[in-house]
Length: 443
Image (cartoon, rainbow, N blue to C red; front, top):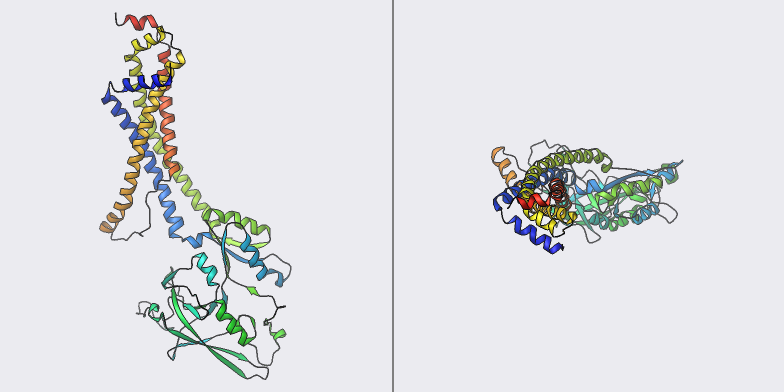
């Protein structure tokens, strides 16, 4: 008996009792939909809490504190170390934050600016890493800078005091007065004019403020060319540079970096990058190490929700078993005729397994579509309900439910497997029907 004939036979018999078929498919669809929706809650919350609430850069960044070495010089991060880190697979960018080693006097329109520090960053690397701004853009020219979100906050201001927004300064120029002591002890100074083009993102912690001025490598070179020291360090009058520990500018003077971060292209590559650089002796830490426990909790949560949903599918299998048992009883004469003309028991078993699998697949397809509709409705409706009844605003990118493609595929495979198991015993029973008794029933 050809497969096409078996399929045609199954389709004709399924049309004979549409009501029973509909109820069986509906039960299977409800079970499959329940499984997907429950598991999608775990996926959605994990996506929102871990990837969104924590922050993409925070998740993908690896802090580099130094290199294992027997001496202080060997423990520090140099230019060659940055070059190596950039060559590691799946590293998107390597950033650093170096403080200018002197208190630079900064003014705007003749008024002192409340800047706590001046920090040198590589804006090209920061652009790749996702340097977030609240206003403006990242510098593209040599004398362009970014200021901290709280740069206009006065030192004696209290919580709740109204502070003018820093974005009003975009397009204005800052005067940066750099100083250095000559060999005879006299102080010299140079003023650099830089343009504000961006404002950093508001700090996530209420107690934290950002009043720094972020300068690029072009501005740093101007400062160092005047001070003749790395990071614009000031000489101590009457003390030699070698005795004060100040690094001069020169080919033989290695540059040391602080605040180094390695940014991975994806969160799931952080672990592999961290393990590789640790083997090279780099002392590092990433928030991904702490997220292992959080991800484990969500994994257990998803397995638990999926297990509960699977129970619903198993309950639906009772309906499939009942439908297939009744189908075998009702088609006893057809089975007898097939046996009488020489149909193999495997062909008869295959017919009923095919019918049960079609019921399972049809229910799984409908259930998957319904689950996606419910997921979209939940993501749209719940924020509205929470905002209306609890007066709380949910972040725009928060997802209560997320259905990855493989979740829908797994649910469909579970429904198919349960349907085949439910139809196996009735199919086996069909092969044991006696031909004479089956034909005698109609006489």
